[in-house]
Length: 532
Image 1 (cartoon, rainbow, N blue to C red):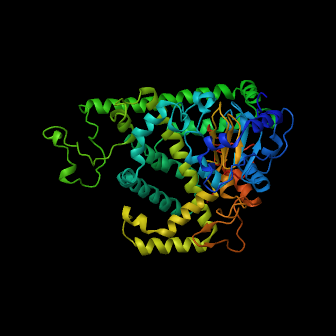
Image 2 (image 1 turned 30 degrees about the vertical axis):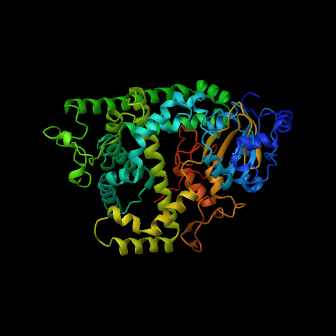
Image 3 (image 1 turned 90 degrees about the vertical axis):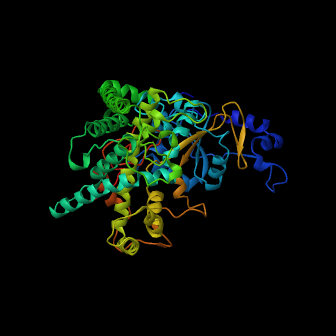
């Protein structure tokens, strides 16, 4: 069915007629007899009826929000599981590549999906245009069945462990002190502070230190060509998404035509090439630095907590004075020097470039978006702000923040989590069932190659689930707060502010709810208000 996809009803009927309890038990152990779970399987419920050629375009676009908001509305109408025909240009992944498309926002079914990683996997990136973009074969843009995905994960994931986060804490705290000074200086000037650009530089500087051992100093006003080009790329992507004459780039074909006619396709390719060249230069500099230090990957690294005698490598005696197991490695050093523990091989050079681009782009943009909206939501709730302040003062006081203090601030943690519920930077992700096998999810039969668009926004606002909060009012800890006279984010006034602040789309499969959101209309409330 071209850009739309989705199996005809006759095919679904055939799949159901071929499905028997034995097959259901084979493909879903939780349905085996004796578990107290019925072996009866039923088809996945249908969502709104699609139109010929257009699919559910009319249900997923419009002036009242971005894709993530339209899917959330459909979840409130059709529940946490239903079929849908999503035009190819809206998610940037070919969800109809192997079969139909289903929206998933049910917590129990989503939990089962994650418990069966051999069945439900990322399978579509290798068939998408995203792979030809900035991400290449990064951690987020490789499929689960590609060997490089697991190899990179084994090398990089230790950096995201609790120990890894503790090692990077001092770098983050140092950059936060610079941000604090910016707040003080700009506040003293009496001018409005536009938070998101400032926070974008803040998170970019942190990624520079943690990822590459490089201080970009963009917070203090040093020119940063990477951020400038990323902003230019984001704005170009939004124009490309909107198409010609305001026509939404909902289909990959129409988007490509619009890009050729307007020249935006050539602009995007030029910017991608420039950013890729910058990333390669950063990695080349790191390689040169390591080679100049005689291959010692630790020289100049930030000191970790002092190691015990047992942590000092005896083999380093008389050699590299930094060869301690407790010394911090930035991620570029880790990729260039740490072999895969299973294969014993280093990551290929081209993959290191892909991973570096992923860190620089996704690492700074989604985090700055989340922090912007965190501060916005706190500012909308003075009683929450007061409780946050009181907890910080009771735990930390006027002294410096410490790693141990973070774990003691329970209410602050609740506030952060509630903000992520309300404003998940990644609005959805996609998992696909085996292209050659009928399986089940819960009591539902899943035809071969079904793509599940797992909506985090829909999940977090799913009123039909007793395990999720209601859709709008923020919850900070045990009580809900919405002071009288304050508007909820996404209301008309907040939406107008959002349109003024948001600018462009992200080249991502996640239809990100970002200040650079790929909403089809400038009035969409996916962008943060101008948080001043």
